Length: 280
Image 1 (cartoon, rainbow, N blue to C red):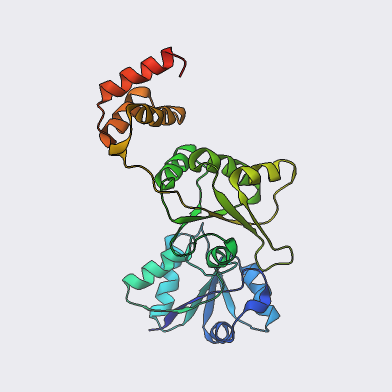
Image 2 (spheres, one colour; image 1 turned 180 degrees about the vertical axis):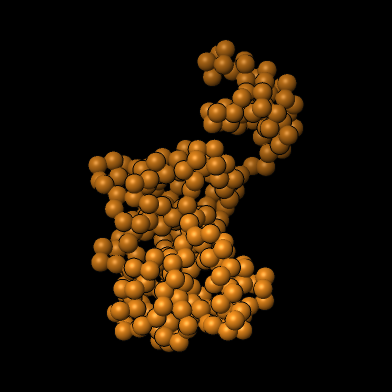
């Protein structure tokens, strides 16, 4: 039986390759790559001749199974992504899972990571953080994701594409408030840039400036919140209103907050109606 090597590759600067990464890529039987064209540039740079198999987010599980079959039959394989460590918010995760289920030997050949690199230069707390990947483009899933982490006190790390950056910053301000944020762009590349500011300042900055390059967004964690049992009725109603603004029906919003506080659904609804009548 062969081995699957999870091989990190440079996130921008090709000089960030390691001797062990190069030796592994030279010695495996074949390489599964997210984009064979990108990986071929890296291999050509270091004069490595190796068979490449396309394996990406749209690949079927059948392809992953066929790669695992070849490894079981004695071939060594490497999996790489376009940049950084594969299998992190990446389809390589499926291949690793399949190989693990088959008891195939899996070894890691670590390399640069955009997540870790961004946190290291963010200027924010690095003791505890949560990698959140890309936000969904589906509104419901996006709202649920942001709602689930808005009270997390850990530093939050997101990936974002330039054409979606402005909308994401607006969503951050709405759900997180005006926290500190580090916008890490094109890390290790020629136009590397790290902007450290507040979310509202970032929104203003990109009002006239066009976002370019891939971003890692590092967001300050939430401050310790009052427990739901300590909220006043007025504060609980404000939470109801936030849910309503997100498209949840008033009755459902009251029911949800009632489950989390000491106030009944009817109390919350009555106070909500009163607040609306008073223009609150």
